Length: 111
Image 1 (tube, helix red, strand yellow):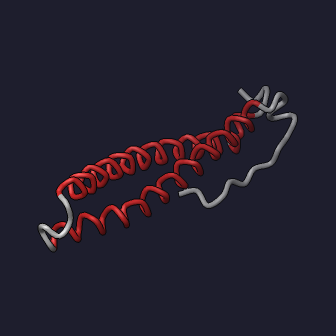
Image 2 (spheres, helix red, strand yellow):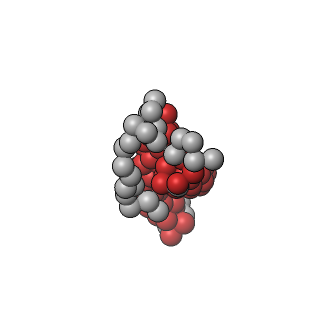
Image 3 (cartoon, helix red, strand yellow):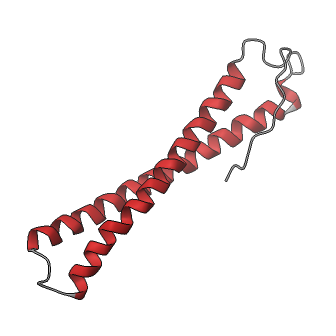
């Protein structure tokens, strides 16, 4: 997990700002995926409560509500898994851009 990115902006290293832009876009995508993941995690609470009630007291809830809860449970879990995978990929991309911006090979004329 990225706790923060520390870098120095230098016109010599990144004259047109492309590397900085890529780094910030990757960080922003990572933060969006993390926020979506947290939201989906908390969406599991009411849906999970519905499924739990239906399993503990069969016949207490109408069948259509039980099916809706089960479908919602599966849907939220699939979305959460997808979001987690995307967040990991975005985090890896942000770390890669941060590492590239700190490497000495990124100076113009150093190759």
